[in-house]
Image (cartoon, rainbow, N blue to C red; front, side):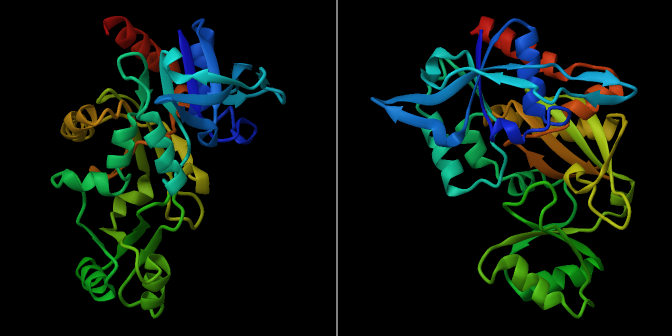
Length: 322
């Protein structure tokens, strides 16, 4: 089979952490052809989606004393060529957020890929439909008290009722721009003005005290949970995101977690969101990550599993079925 991965510049990826690399590595080790491209390398010509792409060979990471060890020159690239994406069996859209205008345009180009010939993970229409903060609002029984607004008074009244709340930019990633606020903070109005820029809605959620014990990332494959990792805040940081220093720890998938997954799964399948990471704090769903969810490397390291292989095997079986 042929796999294409739309990623950020490969030289900037961390092979010991990045899920895209784990998936490419798994596909390669299972005997498949692996190609990479970037969003700006996509085009539509005569109604067909093309990419300026390169074949890639990656040096598998090694687990040594509980840590992933990588080689300095861990990838080898072929020449840049134009490929018809419909000649790929699967295309993984793995460009990191934020979902900017160029990002959206890339998804429109991917609409030109014939789904009868090529599986796109995740579906471009699904990515457009699923803002990673707003998408969770449809699962009212699973989320903490939440509002979305740009109005300072509405936000203040909500925070006063909660006592403490978390502000999230709707287009943020990796914990960027997330603030813990109290209505009594003398900087409250300024914080709201900075976060909303006076015109942009933000998400405001009740602060969950369980956040100090970790922010659980659960990986779902076709709506089914296949692994989880807990991201625990360190030092004086209240955010658990690994990008801001959160410590990855082993964690189980609880009955409550499975209930949340069961709630979310039908919507994910409806929208073609096959590979997703949901975030759960204290038994509450806080985000649904659909653009480039990560966590595979940490789960593999802590649990002794190979989730990348599981994902590629799922693609193989789906391709054979169709």
